[in-house]
Length: 407
Image (cartoon, rainbow, N blue to C red; front, side, top):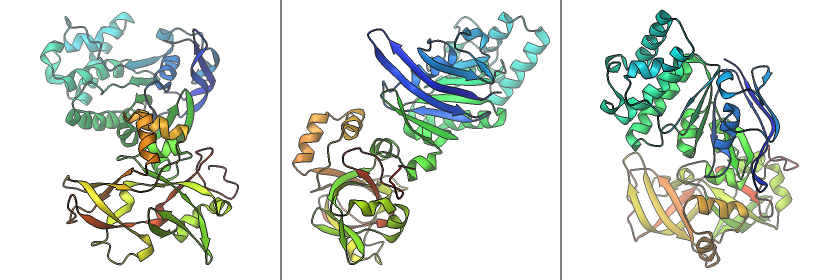
């Protein structure tokens, strides 16, 4: 096992296209680090530079105490798991798992011991004599993992290994990968576009955008204290709701407008974000996570200045919670981050901008499944005003401490 360090790592392709720009990242020994971001953000390129499959234009990649910029992939003591499995169809499961060890001229008894041990961990012992075509997608992915495990490398590098699986199998496999990595305690770098995957698997998560590191932290840190509007909008499912509003000071407290509703900001929010006071009388972008709404019929003791009325366009009852979709008359400041998030969600940024200018801001709330709200009817929702997030209109950076240093 070994720690992995990227120090100001940059990758330029022909035509001066910068895929990764001065990436600094320390991955601890035995840590499960997830790289996540939209397509084209540079996460796979970063992984391939660690593996040696892409050259480094500037900066240093270290594995353990060794700079590996000029070390061939086969000599870096890492094992990769790809999304397409890359199994040999004419070989049995056993031979696929043993192939790398045979190439390395490992002693036959040790090969058998390692393959049997990995097969036991992965639940593959009964499939060792089968060919890949006789296996399910999940079983093939486990064989690919087994091939990596038997090598006993310093690090695992995984490039969207679950993207070819159906939804149910993905959930099952991500818990299996997490369990195996925890048991083996091997440093792991895992690339995915799926932020739910990132949040459920990673010890820490590195969010990237356009080749640059946006924030790295535990899943809880990213969810609770996003440093920017982009991180806030990318992390969390369903995505955070955003609107712009002028922050008003009133009788020692602070308020804002959401459509026709005058909302008081909770004391906890103010104490955790003292820099917010510097924005009194100014426009800010406000973020509310869907989970921070509740049906007023259920949260009946909530204060009146934490409530809004809205017409429910769509109600989706999914058992554990109910998702309600509604439109709020509150435009969003169209920053570059907002456009990037719209594009990643598959929405044409121009359409999104036009909709915002018209004041048609589409919100999603997740409320208690006991709620009786109906589609096409008006309902009153309560907002947890201690859970607001605030962002600077000009920079899209989060508003946090005294100096607004985006802690």
